[in-house]
Amino acid sequence: MLPVPLQVPVAPTLQDAGLLALIAVIVALLVVTLAFSAYTVVLRLRHEARRRLRARLAGAWEGPVLRALADPDLAPQVHGAVEARYRLHFVQFALEYSRRVRGEERRTLRALARPYLAPLAGRASSRRAEVRVRAVQTLGALGLPGYEREVLAGLDDPSPVVAMVAARSLARAEFPEHAAPVLARLHRFDGWSPRFLAAMLAAMGPQIAGELRRGLADEGQPAWVRAVEAEALRIQKDLGAADVAARLLGQPQDPDLLIAALRLLEVVGRPEHAAAVRALCGSAHVMVRAYALHSLGTLGDEGDVPRLIEAMEDPSPWVAIHAARGVRQAGAEQLLAHLAASDHPSALLAAQVMEEGRVA
Image (cartoon, rainbow, N blue to C red; front, side, top):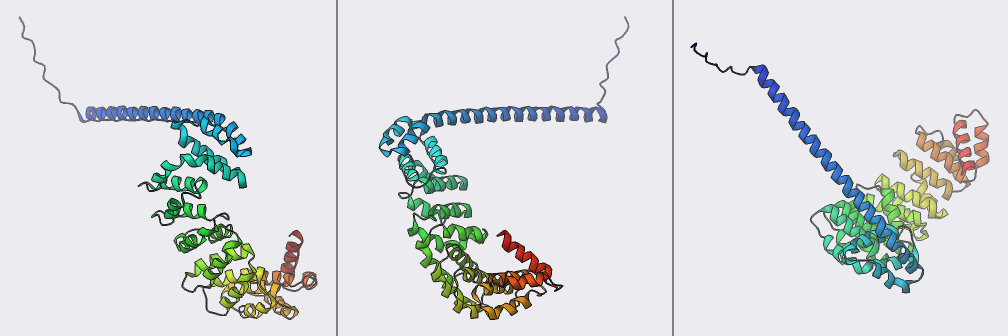
């Protein structure tokens, strides 16, 4: 009988090892892809289930809420339609609905939601900033008065977003008593748009004009904060702020603060403030010079028109156009028309500003 040859094991080559590694990588990627696909499907199903639940609850609540808004005595019907497990869902429904109503209807909606807000008071001190944002926003929209402590605490929150949400919630005309704490924290929002901040403050109404004036006059405040307060007073057209603004022009100030004071004077200033404005028409700062010339057109007299005409040839186009607008504001449109029809270097600018006046 012939002997059976022995099978000598063959060591895998480098090419075989590389192929096995490639197969392992492909299998791993396939498993990961399938896992992500399954997770996406689960998320989509959950999202769809939540959407259907919200739609069903909204359909059940909308009728009772509308009847209660028309007749607050029908509030018990709303509470009867809110199951205990869906109370926070109702708060969310009320929050979204509150953006569509004003005045007495909004107050009624707050009263409807108030019994269900207590859990949010605890969330206002959550470790997670996004949870605090949502809680403060909801309490500010639906819980005032009543949850002032939680919303006021938000002004000092480590997160600037939470602090801003709290400030916006408190900066409403119906709560002028909260103006002082909001103004005291205004320095926290130096990264936000000054125009946005000014509009927020102005929305609190003329009741806070006195505090805005005091802030504008306070040299201990940052210049940009005072500039925001000046802009808020300009939006409110507060006549009492004119003297404060004029005094600022006579002192060395931050250019942005000077510009804000000039813009304020253009709206609320009186002829006696023109002298302070004239002093800045030759400022080395381009925008200060520009706004001074523009304001002079409103506050000055006929004797200032030649100065404005001359400034229309300023090397800075910003200064030139503001000077031309000042001429128009001074009522010297005939001079602008004469310039526009001539071969004067400022003829095109004069024509442009005249057209602006016709469009406005």
